[in-house]
Image (cartoon, rainbow, N blue to C red; front, side):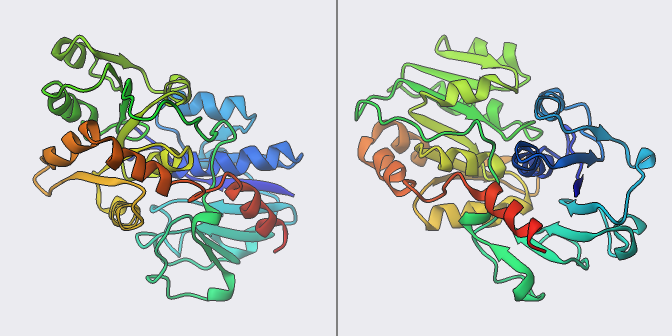
Length: 315
């Protein structure tokens, strides 16, 4: 069996689809199953490095040739419509679709929703897996150690894997006005602008540094995509924002579950509407932060990719 992942990433559309696929591929490769990603990573260098490190080749759609008797298709894309020849049933041993409410309706042998709200799904529930137990996460993600209560040394700020909507820059303007923390690490392409605002600010490029910086973070601000789920899995205090429509479900569910605090959203004009009072409370109120961290305890385990792969093998 070979797993053929169909997903894309770019600086504009983000990295979440390809990132989820990489977590499943990482687990499969560790079990000796060949994997390949068909699509484009759009010049997102840290994501290209990620696929290289797990030994999953990436090739363009035009260069792909499949083996119907051996290949299992795993699609994570909003782009492929039901009539796309690439997902034709006759081309594949079986098909798996990673879906949410924005995914076009497609035929599949297994549907996986790595999210918290599945009421929207109107297909065959016998072929549908969803919830926190089916969220694929990288093997490098670990639970964070409990540090000294009340201490707020380091903040980490990042807007997903590409920050195409300027979340980090917006947050730098909010945070430079506030006392109560020692330093803030931003992941952004706006290094000069952000670091000039405050001597406590340091900007790093997207990539391998993120895991290291999150390892001893006391508070994280990010957007409500795949990155927010990774933060919750680490059991960190989290302030979360909504930047695009397909983040609304996570934005609401994480807040309703009390594992993250809503700090604002990006409205139709493209401007950010931020809840400055909530950001201030996250920094100034240790009980508020600790409540989020405690609620995140065991909310998401680290075995989602293993469960997904087991389900794929069982088809």
